[in-house]
Image: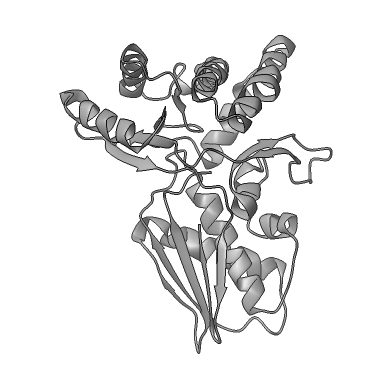
Length: 295
């Protein structure tokens, strides 16, 4: 998990329902509120005012939708006096159906490994959790012209893919268990960078038939090559993209890299954010009348 984009959800009992949110997220706020209420229908579902503060967009590969959904579900649960477990909250708002990383990340942050489901209705099992060096930084680069797959388009993409070959799955497991997790535990930046790149390249090649190549966006494909040629090895695509990430060993390197990329005319219109690893979960701050959650 990373420290940006940050989402703060403030919920309070009110005389009538109200939502104040950035326009790109507003419909999702209504959806998650109503999903929760449909699943937890009681006579105590009093009107609630929900205010969202976020510098974020949906479908950029950064898990914004899941964090927003879980924040609303958890806040409503608190206001209505419930204590549903994490997996139930996720089901209430329709999250964690394919990957549980965002759901587990909401609770604890850090680097997480989803071990999959025993039953289709289960939330994926968290099989490993590791903190990430707080000194490291990740540079995020997002082009303005595309969004990653979501909803029906995402479902269709998965339906079109062949099963992942066993030798590919075995290599990915080996990378996670024998290279990535040990590198994180030992704060071995070079080893992590190498393994993260290989992992992303293998997964990208598997998804290439439905996303148009190893990376979803042509400019970002070229940027990955540029970064690698300039000595940045820990590069990859976040989820379906189009965001590309680049691991940096510290804030100074990240700032310098950002400046160098902005000097390239073909990337001058991209949004770039330098973010820190986030090794903790969402914070809940109750007062007499208000529950504020942020991630």
